[in-house]
Image (cartoon, rainbow, N blue to C red; front, side, top):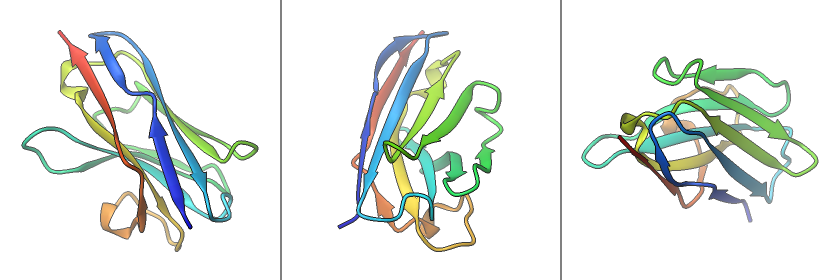
Length: 124
């Protein structure tokens, strides 16, 4: 079974950093795209970043470009989202998701498998 386990959320002050982890299992890690999405209260889910685990291509939403960095570790079947210079508007539940069917994109409906989410709260 495909499983995604997101972790690393927490409470942070404005300007702080957090690293989210997404541990994946049940599929060939190198043949996928792993994305990070977030959903704030009362808002629709939005894509933050994704990585093509086989080639390393990365994409970022404009709102996080330059602050967030996505990376993957094939030895651990884990994708990370390093979040720096956090802002209160980054407060949301963050989800990782896997798309096993190319072509890959940041479109959330193309991601077949989802982790359980991890809450990030940024205080001002």
